[in-house]
Length: 267
Ligand code: AMP
Image (cartoon, rainbow, N blue to C red; front, top):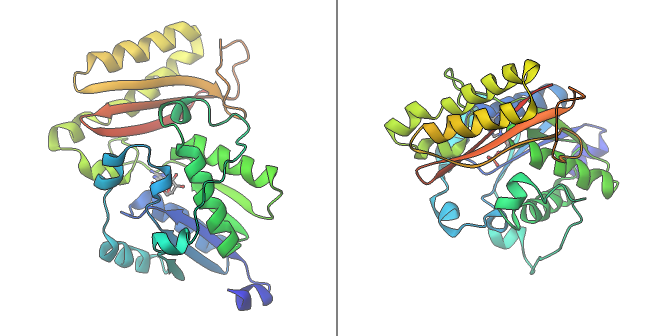
């Protein structure tokens, strides 16, 4: 790694938890096209799971992942053990600027601090020039941008758009846990977001909120955890559509015991 840096070559870093799909590949391809070397990490980080069962059931398939990484000529795969990542107790508490208090942070206490710990550790080890994060996890991406800015780390955070299945379902490692019936229903999450985006042009804020709540409640296996419209920069709740800019709608829905998240920029 030091050799790469001493030659003034750039390192692009794509952190993942494995069970790779085309969403991950889009980040890897972007990194490949923008850097001399691309490193992908695969590490299912226990510190970011607030639910033991979710951690245990998280899909793991390293053999398949290696084959997938070969298709994009990923230069280095870094697959550390828990002991390597956390040789000592690491319970650092991060100042996340309040960005962790809403949405995912509200429903998954400690999640973003766990993400911050692992990402900081990876950044310290790899020292990439650029690190790639998907907008599928929009709040996570904003929080990482905050950490890098707050700690003045010389790393550029590069966001990448959400990759979707043909029927609109946002790609996720957790999708493989959906049964056939759930998989058929799952794209309705994105369809509802698309409708909300269209409604937002002419309807009031409450009309859009009510529509999404009603729609998701009407589709039986769905259990809505949250639907929130927030400012794209500071993630603060938006109260109305008077400005018609910088608004992103974010949703978390349970389908059986699988938790799915998605989002859409309204304007
Ligand atoms: P994960 O393995 O779920 O931790 O995700 C690793 C990275 O891939 C994160 O930056 C995610 O935001 C990104 N990612 C996951 N799914 C998608 C997707 N459907 N489209 C774009 N990026 C994604």
